[in-house]
Amino acid sequence: MAEPTVSAGYVKALLDFAVAHGAGERRLLARACIPAEALSDQDNRLPFARYVALMRAAKAETGDPALALEFGAATDFRKFSVVGLISHASANMLEALQQLNRYGRLVVETEGLGDGPRFQIVEKNAERWMEDRRGNPNDFPELTESTWSRFICWTRRDFPQAVFALEAHVTHPEPAHAEAYQRLWQVPVTFSSRWNAIRSNPAWAFVQIQPENRYAFGVLTERGDELLEELEQAKTLRGQVEAMLMPILHTGDVGIDRITAKLGVSRQTLYRHLKDEGVTFEQVLDDLRRRLALDYLAAKKVSVNETAYLVGFSDPASFSRAFKRWTGVSPREARGKG
Image (cartoon, rainbow, N blue to C red; front, side):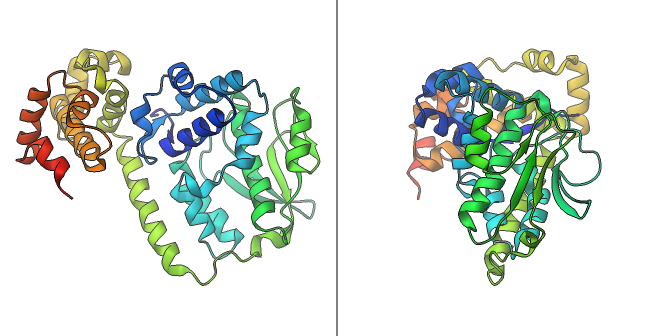
């Protein structure tokens, strides 16, 4: 199975939150091995392991063991992902949950679900529970903390007239910062439970959000579908190679041997499987450089020489020749358009 990923928007939201609470941005990025340029587009993908490393570095840098809880409670989902916008454009809470299950992996991919949604409504003893079914949750309980904080705190903040959470269960043991759970969630919490679940008010599912704004909902879900398709394409070998090239592209050290070592395959195996997908390694590298260069120049936030460096050219003249081969115009001409 391909390594799970998270959106750059989600990573950037955590980074900004930690920096606002006293952490050093450069130190955090260095400790998590995240290149700053990888966060330029919130729809970029980064390995989930990088997000885990960033969360743990952020907790250490800020000295706040409850950082994940605070992050989920304070961060507006709509500001870093189209998934948040889709949820808030849904007709009611039940539809919002359905869309979250449909598009949620655009924010963070989770393992161990098998068939079925990540968030599942369960009726038990005449009570309604919402269960998070992701696998191995205790490997990274901070994701449980931030997810439940976002559900409980933002629902209470955005819809004060409608009670959502009545109690919460988490599978991880009670931490030293347990008081933060009560302070933020304001419901009874059971630690070391058999499941991660929130007991909810049954009436919550039918609370109205945007029942008449179906145009915005349609536009947003179209964008969500496009991103889902891109995510599926990234599961191809080409997508995996691009993901490995992205954080090291600026170094210029992007030879095939470095990628085969990361993948644990031979050169011949990589060439053969890429050929099955209709490309060569050289074509993947060249096309990635082309697409990133066009994005950097269109945004007009970096110079032509800086763009050359970011896409792995030590010599600006070589970059200019490559760019003209890609587009028929010089990088300066392309940057000047629009």
